[in-house]
Length: 603
Ligand SMILES: Nc1ncnc2c1ncn2[C@@H]1O[C@H](COP(=O)(O)OP(=O)(O)OP(=O)(O)O)[C@@H](O)[C@H]1O
Image (cartoon, rainbow, N blue to C red; front, side, top):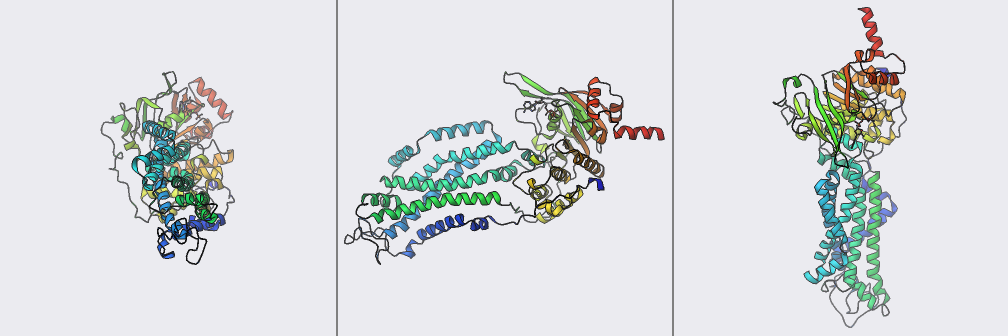
């Protein structure tokens, strides 16, 4: 690494301590109070037999609606039954039934919301339709009808209530997933080789877990309220003591014994409020928590080339196996609202050899990114590859007939042999995870490194890309580092598996001018050290002149001309190239031309 590539030190906050979620809740006075109320209420309910020996259904007609006494600490009801015993035993069924409703709602809403939001398509359409239908049903009427048809079982009522509440989780999760699935850091995770399941469980579920937690707490409270409401109306199982029935009885006897109404009302209010407050406190703790990877140490696992997609496919023409990457006659289309299609890449052909840097240059909207995304398999679902094929190291990623990137061939390559450096570094880092986690996770997943080895390698990579204090940057969150450092982090991630091909899409556009030069120098150094083929997407001929061996000039989705950089820079054959050169170089002679001139003179 040259001195020029080392960024000036940036002041970073001290690394965060890995405080656990429970400890964060315990430090929140409101959270700890709510937790204490729930722990006391739940344990007291399930230890009812030890707390009071009195049978909750034992009647004593000589002592009805009696006030608190030594024998009956909370008094008795209208049948002379002990209020404390009934309150404690009633809590058992209340908590268990609320848990049942919450678990059913979670099971019905969360997985379906994740899949519908992430993949969209027919599953999304079908589940959204079912959700809308369920939400249009009046829950209380359905519960009353179920009670009439199936009997007064609280378990059936609460399981059904869980199904009716499932859509609230579905909508919450689906909406959150839709808002993050298009985030660049999700694309970046895909490109770094993580599977859909891993992306959903880590990056997507991580974003929606806080709303899920608070929603679950609220739903548990609502389930207790609805359950008590049904019992209050006399629709519960009258053979078992419940808080709702106690409320009903207390209400009827409020003038004779107001205290009798107070106990169940207090229990219901305290417990439902505690659930809501605990949900808020947990959410705050989750949002503040740094996720700790829990991967156990593993030995280094080398990915055998015989795994799917890593051996050349037999049907590829010999001419296409001579180069690292071959893109031939590629055309990409999008459907228009009027039923026609819009061609954004039209008959594009080029190749990249090992150790060679090829630039795709052109004005905004000329189709450069769509071409690069075709190679990466990152085109949106609406795009289709109308024609052409793409071959990487003899592996046919897009065949002439398939019209799409083969996922089984692409997945083992992305993040290991084909890497990607994006345009906007900040948007490509997940704000919820530390830099170190995001850098080391693919090393654990793709290279099979243990957590400790991945951390060591990540720190080495950060030093390699010129980060002045790798330890601090490793522990920092994306918002705590500068744009230039974030781009260095992404470059470190991209080269971590020593790829054969690096695709960089305007890697310096979002950076200020001095940092641009440093990042270009870094890319140049890494490219020559690792002998990578590089496909550099840019609108800037200066970048092409600085880095590239060959260049492809694009305009309006087509290639205008292509050739080696010195020829195109000194003798462009197309007016468009001349205009583009004049506008981006502004009369300056690029270093490549100076070098080639001096080489010519020496010769
Ligand atoms: N999802 C999409 N649906 C329809 N058209 C799209 C979509 N994405 C891109 N396009 C169109 O494809 C064309 C090429 O876009 P592309 O992003 O490849 O341009 P570019 O040359 O990389 O420009 P820039 O440097 O501004 O990113 C543009 O006209 C753009 O509007």
